[in-house]
Length: 106
Image (cartoon, rainbow, N blue to C red; front, side, top):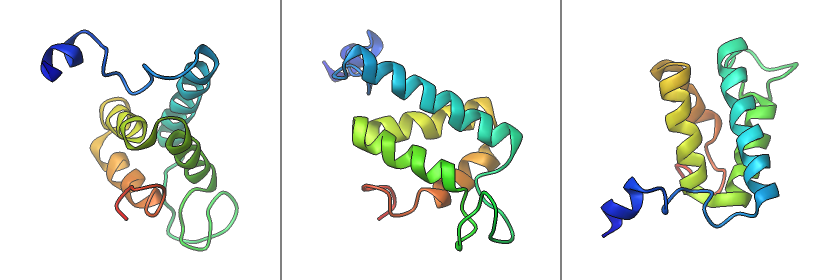
């Protein structure tokens, strides 16, 4: 039954969100993809857009907001979108950039 719901979109991570929340989630996911294409989720040195752990500050803000909106399923959607629309290396960087946000790799 879960498989069938998944096929028809009823288990979509945004299915329980309001229209405004869905729009916000979509915008955050688009921005996340753009960061991956334009910059990177990690840096070799801190400073500027990157925190003391060399993780992209805005990427972490997006991860926290996605977690608030839809939890791990919505964060996972962002991760898989990065894999598909940017590349697998960027997704690996995103994985580390999101450490300790919600239940992401905690």
